[in-house]
Image (cartoon, rainbow, N blue to C red; front, side):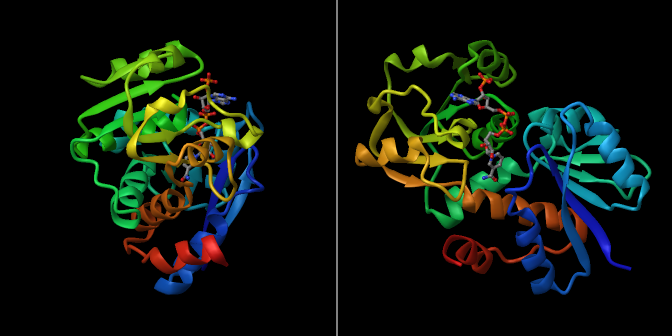
Length: 266
Ligand code: NAP
């Protein structure tokens, strides 16, 4: 019988995850069906309960439910525990298991696909939501020299930073001085055509500006380009985090290069 998976979010109609997992399944000979599940904003638990009861084997979780998914799980991987956010649910065990593959997805895209070394680099992370929470620990583990988290709601950035020794957090006023080799936009600002309030001086010489939003020229990417900064959208992170979820569910790691190429140019 075909094993069923979904991506759960609200909204979720735009998600490329079903297409990506279909490519992975074809390439690895796995018999899966992967769809979309839009849960009501106050109905995440009930939606997962119903999908699991109907035989669903696993799910990816996207905006705005990553923290709700963390609370839903009976068991957690160390990286989900560090993130306090879950993007991958394993539903076919006695106890629901949660993991977070966003961080490994970002780090793999930066290092393997974009050739961006992280060791000793100064990194600025914009945003403190579910996506930002998932990438702090993996960035620290990859040897960055400095990690600063800023967020529109400063208290959320301060609370996130306080969980990790050496990480600084606060509002955008923290950006009055200092420049960074890598600026990661983990806010949802680009989805509504908004630009986080950053001065151009945050970009060091040869900096990379990375927007987790994918498939569109966000105001953040346009702003960085205007100031001569190299840019990348989040398509590579999306494909790499999906590959890690696929490995968790199916025990086989799919190749990502052709899928990323087709997503970008197909
Ligand atoms: P979330 O939990 O809802 O958090 C949203 C974040 O964006 C918060 O920090 C919020 O600040 C900030 N924000 C929203 N609008 C803003 C604006 N106009 N100006 C400044 N900050 C703003 O969402 P999430 O799960 O973290 O996802 C964030 C983004 O990352 C989404 O666009 C998502 O699509 C993308 N993402 C991509 C990948 C990938 O694989 N490429 C993976 C995960 C997420 P406040 O706290 O002040 O509200």
